[in-house]
Length: 142
Image: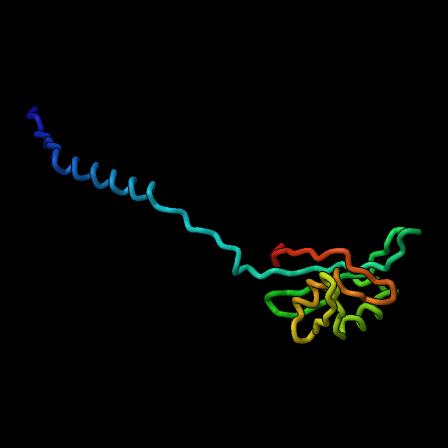
């Protein structure tokens, strides 16, 4: 029985060296690639001002509802209004607020600057014993 000739593939050393150097270059480029910086400046936010009916020092303040300013729509909306206070809070949101900061008094318009209106509610006199304790700043996706 005659033997079949098997083809012997010779390794081309220059080709192998070229492959190794190209692979090393690509790996080096991937290692040196700087990460993409993540900026949150362009992410829209919402500002939540919680309003309470003031009862202290005799009892705890009662949560009446929240005003929410949305950066994406530039609107002020209400959130979780308690039924017994909803009319007062809706009427309060129709007008300007008188803010007292650092000994100065000034008005902030809800219609001209809605964001400033919500952010400055803790410094405003809201009348009828309503108070705003703080403004919470969150991203709109939270």
